[in-house]
Image (cartoon, rainbow, N blue to C red; front, side):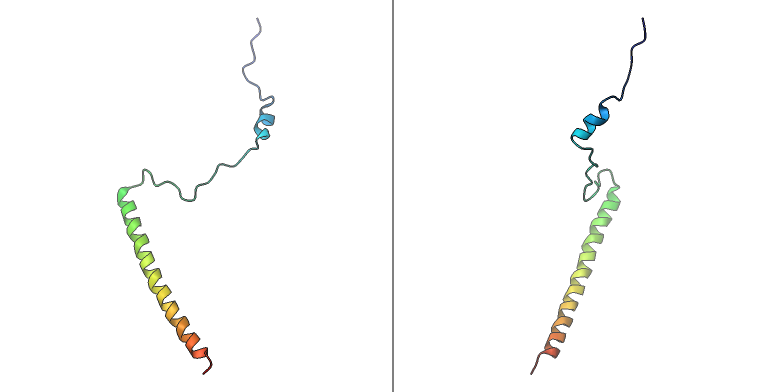
Length: 75
């Protein structure tokens, strides 16, 4: 008796393309599961303090914009 065929790629490409071959969806943020807890804790504080500095900078920018607007206003 002849050996039977074990595998073929016949029709596989057509089947795959019927629904379209799509790229895997990329998530916005990669999972932090399994990351060192000490690192995660530090990351949390770093984000918090970055926001703190950003708020201060935005406030300074608003004050400067007000000063410029007051200077340019006709009297």
